[in-house]
Picture (cartoon, rainbow, N blue to C red):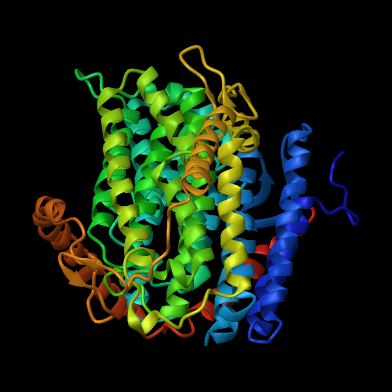
Length: 635
């Protein structure tokens, strides 16, 4: 049954109204004691409306329009949400809900800029709604710019290193915006308008050179937001040093806006068939092959940079870049299995990455540090945070029983079935690096010897641990029963024009080999149960000892002896990776950083770090009023 609303409003109008109200209210009242609860309520309402919209789409609603109309440069803008936009919107509103929940209690009360954190989060949701429901290329460009500036406002809220990284991000973003604007002008020249249907109709008459130009401009412009290599150096510091739940939101969904736009422009508008026809003469190399190898390099290089990190936040955000490569590669396989695997990995990544980032900030909240060389043994003090992080790293590593295993298995399977051995090897190499680095993460924080200065700390409050554990639980449930998440993926896949992947509650059915996670998880849990029975019941010869009542190498351990190997955790790999990492990667980053600093100096007088979010909000609102002079609600 359609989601009915009074006053000729659609559910998309209601969602826009909630997002706009949240932005204004939280900028005004986010500092109040109840500001966190207000934010949770508003984002929860947005999530509820999004879920209702999904039910309408599943019932055959087709697309959900908005009655909002604006005229810009003589072009009437309209917004319509289809299954592809809804899929990414579900992740957006869900991530905002969990982020605001995390900030609703103790975390929000100790923050000096709680109002800015709440306000920029709501602003990001609002701009993403506009982007994901854009009805033509001009609306897509405007939404893209709003999203870029909203992300910038979130990154600089705390000042410090994140501000410098945010200026570097804007350098990339401006270059990407110019590429996107050029692509839109090319389309307008060939199609005579900005409409999606006009672009599709004009494609058969476009020359090969024009199609290559569009491919390069769209891939380059939107690839910046995904931080595809070589435009990847900005993301890790920008996301890492953004505080708390804001960092979790950026990691979970912000970079995925680039993937959405790539799917919309290259797959939904241009199409796999047209892209397959774009070949480099005398080589047989297709346009998608080039982008697939960019995705493969993005899987591997940032993953092994993550292995070198000693800051837990940087380790995870570097992995976020690499995981984007898996998503894009799966989609570029262009089979129902590959596309479903890539989209499912978007969903899965959002769940376990948010759990991981929130767990790390819970550790920072209690210990004051994210330095992996300064932690250890916290499992006895923060056991719930340990469980959340453990479940998260299992998902990130792509191991059962968590949901990350399912989507990675589908991507591997799609690569093997389509006979792409080199890309398969790249995917496996990336996963190896992920497993090594996430073990380093959990070992250096929670295992080994507890530091003396951390012996009195307590578990994070329930307002912080519950969101983490719920997210980890979603990762387990959708790993045990991936059909639940695949039904959500179906909405996006159908909107892309790709055949749906047959699936059931436990997984997928394929002629070349199926996957049923109900059996996989059942056997795994059964094996663990047998081991526990043997250990606790039949053996019963264990005894507990304090870590300081032990000895190693002939020496008794005491509190002044650090028996916890964390510094230079993988010295052999570091010797192999270190030279090239400290070589061309650092030199490239330094050069780009100099350019960013020059640009930042030019902007500093206007956009001061403390006031930029307010400036961006004022400019956006005034711009909408100016642009809407010839329009408004209704036709």
